[in-house]
Length: 308
Image 1 (cartoon, helix red, strand yellow):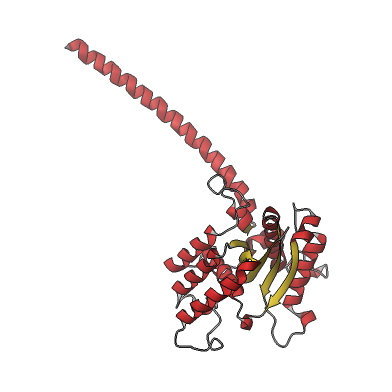
Image 2 (cartoon, helix red, strand yellow; image 1 turned 135 degrees about the horizontal axis):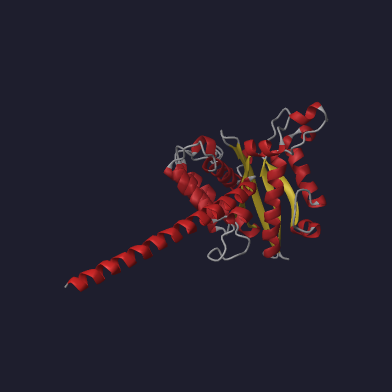
């Protein structure tokens, strides 16, 4: 393996309690080009701010409504650099309904029964990222946008625990159901955390990807046409498992995985099978009626011919 990649990740949460870790991977050789084009985009977006230090860091929550065209262009910059989108969407209300409220077990045990949404989502993203790296005969690292505040020490910080979870995934295959641990260790080479103020292009695009997915996956959140267009571009880049999308569209599994949507899929498929049975029965009845009408029409025609 010789080709190295980097995966940029960030998280977002919607008012519907939808949690997302998402971002994109590109070849490491393309990082310089992406950063250059991204800096040019910032100059065009804020032309009156000559100094790069004075230009704000793109943050979807703050700027997307005011400058949607810049965010669409930003996502397309990643697409131009061979980006593949990876994300995990967790419907937290459904997750807790299935596995129990996260806090109830604490009356009996000293631990939470349900794992952190950060850990669950990161596990699914790394699993699919590893699949991608293996298929590409490549290896890669992961960069995450930091969440620490200045008052926290490193060992008590959310970034420390997230990095520790990554290392557990790689070292012990934690949360990965199908991939051999040797492949995980070989393909994944490290995890770094960068703060927003460091102005990393990839992390600002990852922030946009996670935010837009969270909004568009929330049933009670209205989205503008501009946001829907950005989501369409994001979904086009979602990893498809190495399959030809015309033959198999697996982006909802390999690219943007939804939890616990797979459980609902079983019920949906069952309902579809039942509906298909009812539809087939109705078609059969309609065919019988049609044949009856044809016979009646033929009989009437024979009578009319006879009278003539």
